[in-house]
Image (cartoon, rainbow, N blue to C red):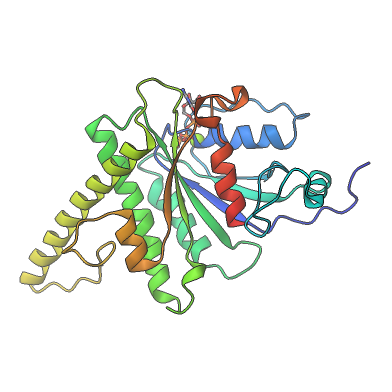
Length: 272
Ligand code: GTP
Ligand code: MG
């Protein structure tokens, strides 16, 4: 028997991150897990356009409103019968498409108050084997910095009493199956240190601009440039929560390497 009327998914997640991180591979995997019957071809080529996928949360993944679901819980039966659906927007990570697509999409979705397009969370995917390369690290951190700045501006414009409505960010530390992959903890440290550098040079640029009398509305991430940047400082200053969680799109079926994508699905569940 099929459910006659499935409720339309009302939760949206945005998938950002540099080219080659595995965003499309992740989206394709979620789609395949959602409807095992339909065999989708794995698109591993560079994306040039955003796509929207409707997928389901595995019934055993607890949701924010149903946090302590146990195997004996009747709500689990209900979740199996009527799985929770949500939408993922996969964006192209190429440097030339970020501003026009990923960041533009983020600005639009972050401002939307419409329940149909409301943004529940941002997944920023990184290739943890590629971060040892200085250029890749700088590129990745710059993109993340710009994403966080959009969210910070949104947080500032909103009423300060509603801290709970800030859009959370998951840094999905992908490709943990590769033996050259950096562990999530060191991904976190590297990104923090690199964002600190970006922040410093931006602040210096602003000061120089102020000397020449040029007005600039630009702001610094996490405000207090006296303090060293950490994601904790960001949360303290803006209310934006960021977590770095390891996983692997490749290893998901084997339930091996850092439990595949399970912990990212758990993060998504907590946002629902
Ligand atoms: P753009 O569309 O250019 O932004 O890139 P993307 O983030 O969509 O990357 P895509 O999903 O196309 O993946 C890039 C490559 O990484 C593909 O060859 C994938 O098969 C590979 N890949 C994705 N996830 C993993 C993983 O967990 N482990 C390994 N080893 N490879 C992966
Ligand atoms: Mg892609």
